[in-house]
Amino acid sequence: MNIQFVCLENSTEILSVLAIFLSAFLAYFFSKRRYTFEKHYDRKLETIEDIYGQIISIRQELKRYLWFIAKNNTKSTEERSFELKGVNDKFHEFQNFFWKKEIVLDDFLSEKIEKLIKKYIEISSASSTDLMNEINKWGEVDKYLENLDKLSEFETIQRDIKDEFKKVIQK
Image 1: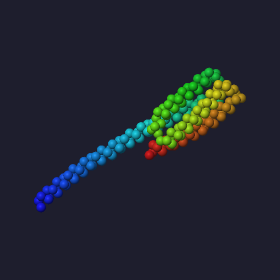
Image 2: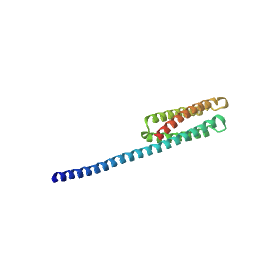
Image 3: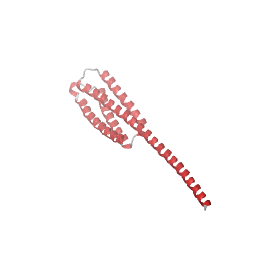
Image 4: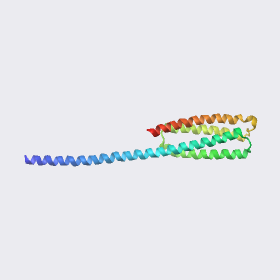
């Protein structure tokens, strides 16, 4: 009976050691997964903040440009062209940044930003065409007012993106 008790004692020790190893392994496994998740979430949050900040900047620059052209027609065509180029350059920087970071975002967010990009291109193209055709005389300022209407569509898309970003952040 004494021999069986020793064997039982050894198997209890073995089970205890196995339980300790299993606990250590599980703790490592879950902490590694948590670290990976937190790191991914932090990168995603940082990307969202950067993208949204750039969207706001582009919207403000485009709005300033369109309001200036629609309301104040005192600058030369070259000066207006230079200002529009500055806005477009800022947009292209945003577009390149988005394409590099798109992989971090969910598909529905990427689609909304693509929609915003298309709307910007529509507004910018119309503004460039109007400028190049010199359709910026007082009687034809309505073309710029039409672009301001398109800007409100841009702003609506931007608000949708903001709402989606907030949902992602609150997960």
